[in-house]
Each structure stands twice: as structure tokens, then as C-alpha cells.
Length: 217
Image (cartoon, rainbow, N blue to C red; front, side):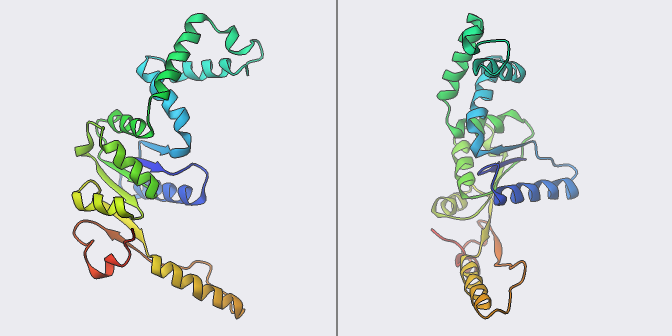
């Protein structure tokens, strides 16, 4: 399976990707997470994808990128590079500039012939995966699951693009916040962890009364 996270630094993204990875490792020996794509690293991912397309290895790209920045002690940056390498690096940058974020995700989907699932850990990541599904050649073989619900995600549940969503309870979150604030004001303390509720939503249960109250647009 492929994971898509909104960034590589926030606590929410780290906790969710860590939890999914640990659950898979501990309880599903025939499944593995092959890649985690972080949405704040797309500039580097596009360069890597462009390099692959032009037959340049990851190691070569890393070396050329350092040289072009002038960080190596024995050269003067891009001016010290050979004409051939400089032209190749310019070609890579041109190809990368023409890629969208969804193009990169689609490439990762196609990279693994046995890819069966994609899990996006927040609403933005879900939308990105949906965009990638429009161009990925193997999207029919991939189960798409995500976190959070919105207008686009609910529509995708209905048409079958998304197979399921983990949805938080917005009413429960607001209610628990008011209770917690009142307890602080009364100086009676709060629990260290407050479970505000969540539910698994798919095409079969999305119209259930208990579930519809958690779907927001």
C-alpha cells in the first residue's frame, strides 16, 4: 500500500502515518507500506521522477544537485559542471516543472505492479489521491481509503472512487471542548486523553442517520 501525508513535520501527520505503518507491520504480514509520500516534499519528488524518466539515477541527481548549488568545496557551483551534465540537469528541471503533484502520485501508483491500496491521512491528501486516480493506469486495482470527509470526498464515496473514510465526530469535538473548558474554569481538571469519536464510512452506511451527522460539506 501507498501512504500519502499532508506534510512530514506536523504531529497529526506523523502520528497517523506511524499508526498505519505499525498496524500493518504488526498484524498483516502479507502487506507492506512501499512508500510514504509527503506533500511538502513534492519539489524533490518531481526532480526524482523527472530524473527517472530521463535515465538519471538517484545518486547522480543528488551529486549534480549539490554541485549546482556550489556546496562542494572544490568547485564553483554550476559553472564548474560539464556542459553535458549541466544540460541534463536543465532537462530534468524542465520536465519536473511540467509535472503536477497528481502526476507524481500517479507515477508512484504505477511504480509498484502489486499495489493494492492507497491510504491518505487527511482531507487534502485524499483529494490529491483522487486527482492521481484520474491518470494512473492501474487505478482500478487500487483501493482508496482516507481520513476526513468533505463535499468532494462524499461524492467520491457515492461514485465508488473512494472505498472508505475514517471520519471524526465534529459535534463530539465541539461538545468535548466546551466540557473541558468548563472543567478548567471550575478547576476540577480533565482527562489526559479525550476520545471525541470517529466512524468508518463507506458506500453501504453513509446514509445511516448516525453516520450522516458526522459528514460535513
